[in-house]
Length: 181
Image (cartoon, rainbow, N blue to C red; front, top):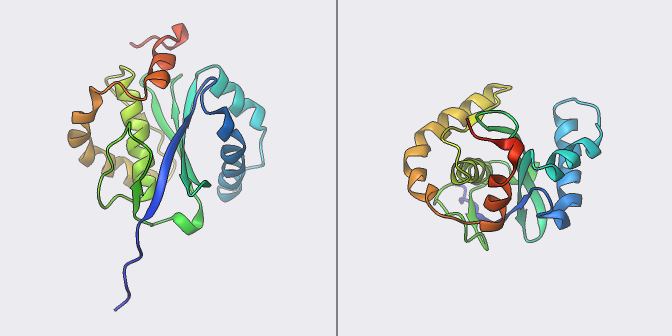
């Protein structure tokens, strides 16, 4: 019988406005791999950077020992906000993960890298004051993620009332163009 692989240890970082600029290069490299994986052209990262700087998007980045492992996007321009593109580096796909140095999010046992990212995007949106967080569903994998998220949301609600990461939540809340409806 094959041994179960040890969980990878990941840390979650966020990019939004001026926050997390030091991770832009890591995110940019993953974004290009994501675009290639879906058969899209390399695209113009300046548009993505503009969306972050204007506060229209939050990107959550997973790092494993400082190496970028994956990302997820939370689009704040849509109402309700939508969890968008998700990309995990192939060597981290399907791997169970444990959160480290991510005090603003409870580490759930048995979660994979993508599940921690999905939860982080949802929790950030809810903590920022949005009652509903939607999802862009582009493929069967997106539908499976959405179905899984719906089963988890009731237990995540206990974490919604927390006010961390404070600087990110304050930045999202004070954007006049992101008025909640």
